[in-house]
Amino acid sequence: EVYVLRLGHRVSRDKRISTHVALTARAFGAKGIYFSVYDENVFSSVRGVVDRWGGDFLIESVEWRKFLREFDGLKVHLTMYGIPLTEKLDVIRKSERVLVVVGSEKVPPEVYEMCDMNISIGNQPHSEVAALAVFLDRLLDKTFRMKFDDAKIEVIPCEKGKKVVEKP
Ligand code: SAM
Image: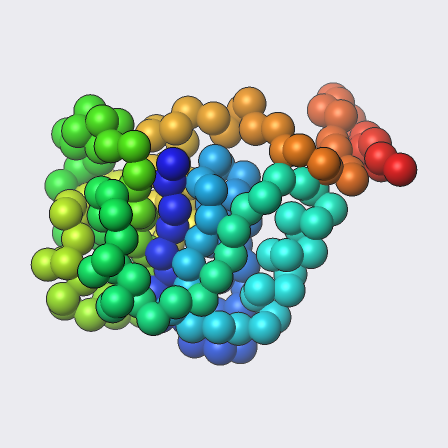
């Protein structure tokens, strides 16, 4: 099981990217996301997606220091300064519960110490959304097989245009 911890959301400014972090977590196979900041906008749009597109993805706000300290499982911080994911994938795969930590602006230095691993997705600066997507895809390899229970709406893949089925 993989969970995501999103640190340091700036209300209003980070609304869109935080929503994308959460939707990426869900779509790429994580079980849930914890936010260090509660933003009504983000929580309601993610819950709206879960309601329509299915599954039981969890979204919660937490006091991040306490949560990170007490999390029972492997804590992996994604940072461009870390060890390349490809070098640690086998070790991470052995863990039944993983918490992936992603930042927004500057991540507090203690996060590097509190986590078991600091892992990079390449050593160039990019985005928490990209970093999370690559991490989950490499670790879980579920992206193209995701199915959600109780979905009210589902895409039928097609060459052109949009095909969706709405379930009563
Ligand atoms: N400049 C900030 C710092 O040094 O802490 C990071 C800003 S970056 C826009 C936001 C988040 O994206 C980071 O906290 C990290 O989780 C993730 N990220 C960005 N580039 C990354 C990379 N190359 N590898 C892993 N994670 C990355």
